Length: 230
Ligand SMILES: Nc1ncnc2c1ncn2[C@@H]1O[C@H](COP(=O)(O)OP(=O)(O)OP(=O)(O)O)[C@@H](O)[C@H]1O
Ligand SMILES: [Mg+2]
Image (cartoon, rainbow, N blue to C red; front, side, top):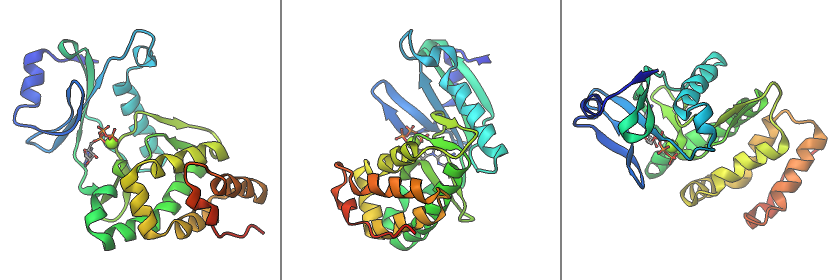
């Protein structure tokens, strides 16, 4: 893995715009030549990040997703920055906007949300547990297809993911107030009926998933979900 000196890092992000911050400063930059520089701070000595840095996981997951036919970023560089006690990845900006960013263009966002259940089913049925799932991490590209951008925390299974992981994924989106509001505007029932229709779970597991959704304490409005399992 390359190592960047402080000077090389400063040259890399010279004139760049910060897209996201952590308490220690910018953690995602957009450079003047349309590259994204994403920084992963080293965590404590016991962290799994020490064994396999998040930046390398990010690159590995990007390649794996793409090999499975899911669009994601193309990592051009992974490097260590000792002066920041961090690793970083560099990848070209993808053309498009996150589904969250489309909230101010309701028609476009509704179009994206109408296709999201099918996309989630495809991920889940193919064993992809994309843990950072929220509407700010799914990009709708200019051709209308989706791409995943925040991917270091993704797990791959040989089989479709479990009911509990599906549930965790769905609740993760609903846990973000703005995403919850967008889905409520779209129609939670419509969203879940579409998900249940294409999730490829057998009737028993579909009924378990539906029951867990309806009994959620965090999202009592799901009690009203209308869906009939056969
Ligand atoms: N390849 C890309 N193409 C287009 N936009 C991107 C890309 N990568 C990042 N962005 C933009 O930068 C923002 C922050 O990037 P990213 O999601 O990787 O950072 P983050 O700080 O980990 O976000 P969070 O933890 O809140 O999900 C995204 O929400 C998106 O608007
Ligand atoms: Mg993100």
